[in-house]
Image 1: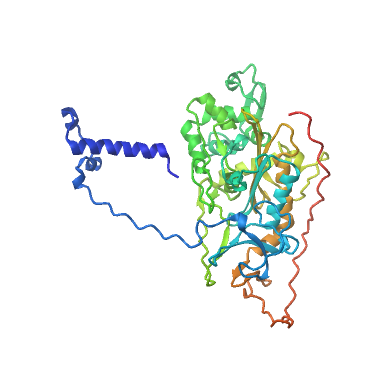
Image 2: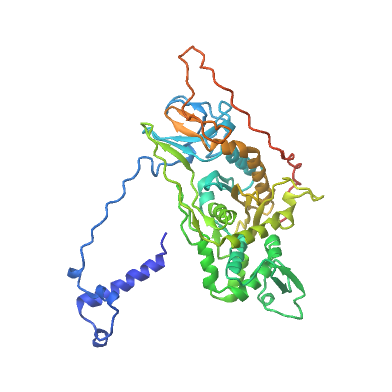
Length: 523
């Protein structure tokens, strides 16, 4: 997406020079000015300009622009009914999930969209993970909520869950793809990356300050040796979301162009290619140093979409490498031909050591920082033993009615060997029932329960009249992907070897902790 102001500026400049060159009605002193040769061409008359030949537009693929997640249905592995055949009776599936009744087991099925002309689209979404997040949002009565989960092998989308109970007319996909909420303290990891990349700070850099750790007054940002008796490191500031530490470091070390450059590298102010349009996340970095310091700490001027939040987390999880997400796993034509689009290409946007250092600081969020209570009980025991989670929280309350609290949790897991990146955004009323880091913890637990099956189902392929899940031999090589032979009507199917049972997880998850405490009486 181009910058409209920059485009208008270029066209305006060229238009003025063209006008002066073709009409010849210009002042003498302008005629005598020296113009660089490379720019002088625009002063020629229109008759001297080469004829513009328009390039033919690329043909639209038959299935392109027809992706509709709300019309996707659960298709079990094995032979599938032809499009238009009687479908199983629908149950109480979540909005947009395409879930059906008990006739189809979501754990052994995938979401497929059938187009009337015979094209079929296999989605990357995991039906269990998708519906589980929607169930959490519904049961906890969250007004607006979104969850995005990316498989870090190629940034395929495992969950794209949007929820709106406050305004049912809102499209659930819009809740996921629109930059409708302030980035809040999630922007601290962008500021931290800029500090490390510019070599103006390290994780152990200490900042001394006075005043509150979370609110920021202008006078608090100015050094005062007699008052600055509290000191914290940059690493502590990320884990505990200390606004003053981040703001003072940004004030001293990050000019406007430096912070904006890092934000753009991390895809703010940029288009994120996806099969469904994703709204650009704006980042207005002020020229005023004091205001810029506040923005660097997460106060306003920067918005973020849940999709971008997951992509942002994936960049740190993948060691500074960005790859656009995708939700289409495969497309086949009416004749069975494979029309699947190529995977989006990865691109390095951040130094590996910078990404790793920020990730290490994000780990403190769940072990000792702002999300600790959702990941460790009162005795210090992990709710997810042996699986560290790197994350960042963010919270900011709107200035206008209904004054919702925008609550973020973005990150990746396992932190020491990342498999998924995620973003959870809740918009809570003053009386809330869960925060984003609780929903994020449940998301990670559900993924871990499904991880073996999710990995196995990555091999799923559509074939004519079937959704096939081929097996792998002990070496990992794929066995035949052909459909299971079927006997004639009334005859038993040919015998086949039993499907090997995957080994049990050596570290089973603990039971989910008991019911949450009742909602608070006030904000």
